[in-house]
Length: 201
Image 1 (cartoon, rainbow, N blue to C red):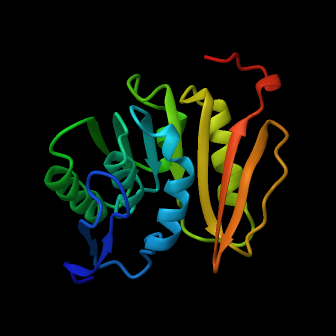
Image 2: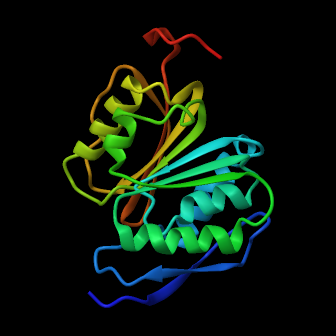
């Protein structure tokens, strides 16, 4: 695999609006399109100032960088591929020079959720953009792992991106607040139902 950028993506809002980040050369890499990211972040914008945000399956890190640009107080990126983590760390060092705390973690997303560091608690927003599939398994695994892990606040939001044609499993402990399609992409926003046993914070 040849190294080096194959293109750029643009941060759509906030302090870094218009800044571009390089996309490493990786054939299966599929960054969220600018227009989709802009629509999502315009929707969740009021939640972001001062928020603690987790970007799972981070890839280029664009989702977490967008959150930081829009005022997040702390952002964690979790990505397992060394090439992507190296590029992500470079982008974070270059762009996130003032403001909130940043953490880049090289790990499998589900392993991270299974054994989170002590500091990785109390997230206000979790952003998840795993590789696309059609059976909804990634969403189901992510919902189960987040419900089991002491990571997401009771009032916290999960933003999950998947293929438009992918299934959405029925998970009684979660409630879908928003379900939108943008061409081949489907974005769901979910919260844990308060009656499922977790007290509000």
